[in-house]
Image (cartoon, rainbow, N blue to C red; front, side, top):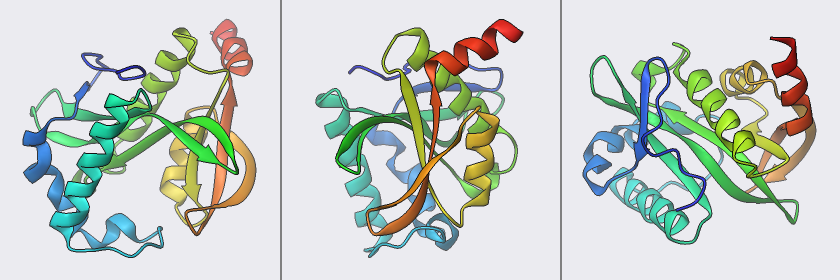
Length: 182
């Protein structure tokens, strides 16, 4: 289960592997119409979407394709979202993505940025990739702001799963330069 951040902590978050028992907690993400307001897709019933999402994550775990980590708020002990390193195919090129999703009650509080920065450091410190990306819908300004706060800049615009997206990126060499400035 390469690329996972199981047991890693940030100031306010504890990251762990997702578990089957998280299903009921994460189901509300798929019940919230705002969760997909920036993403064009044919959604099925929330229970089916959530089950398929978990199946995909466990498949990623088993095949060393990364995967999302559960984000648990330390103060409350509640599951508030997911963030992780994912192997993705973008324009026929395999790339490592930092992906993140939060339940609506926990958005705009810096949690996604905190988790994404931790993923970036983990990936570069463990030499998982020389470049990291985030795939973000052109209309998702909140996620774009997270990517920018994570030191990423737009690499290109493309279409990903029938959605126009910006591919944000950061190179390890640029991350290292930023570390030297501290």
